[in-house]
Image (cartoon, rainbow, N blue to C red):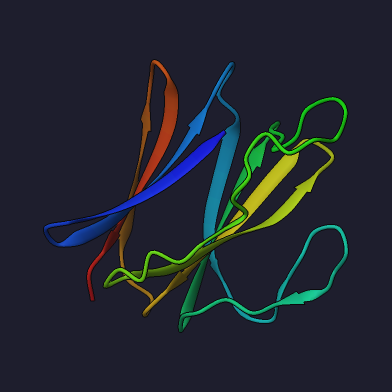
Length: 124
């Protein structure tokens, strides 16, 4: 699994890349407090709006529990996308929260070879 961000004209993009079969995904705005899965501990994330991204079945670790993706937090500081934090990797569910400058429109595109999920977040 790989995660990367970039600024584009009018929007910020985050891309989640997977090896193997693509997982199902779900996105929705959530309200604080943001909590880690499965601990339930609160997590501080920069921003005034929070977009939750859930992948299932997915893992950010191998069969021995070693991380397959070393970065759990990114701070791109882009106009819309301020912070990205993995808040869960438990029971074949990987979840992230995107800390945004404000609640804005977004669009999602699933891309193949390799499988990627691109989320474009409109600039405020």
